[in-house]
Image (cartoon, rainbow, N blue to C red):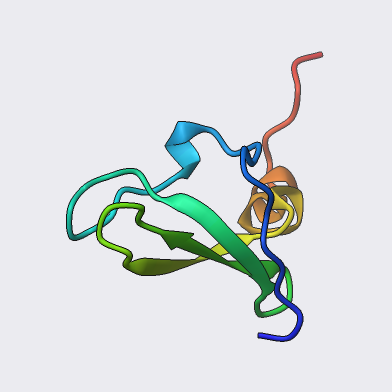
Length: 79
C-alpha cells in the first residue's frame, strides 16, 4: 500500500480501540493506517503472539459519518 503509514510505538489508541486477536484473544497493536473508501480509513492490527493481521474499516471523522444524519434529525437541545 503506497499511501499507508506505520504508527510509532505507543499510539494514542486506548485498550478498547485495540481489538482482540480472533485466534488467541490477545490484544492486538495498530500496525498501520491506509486510506479506504471516501470518509473511511483501513486500520491494520497485528497480534504480538501469533503474528496474525486483522484489518478494520473505520470512519475517519465520526461527525462526517453516520452520526451526521443523526445530528440533522429532530433531536434538539433543551431551551
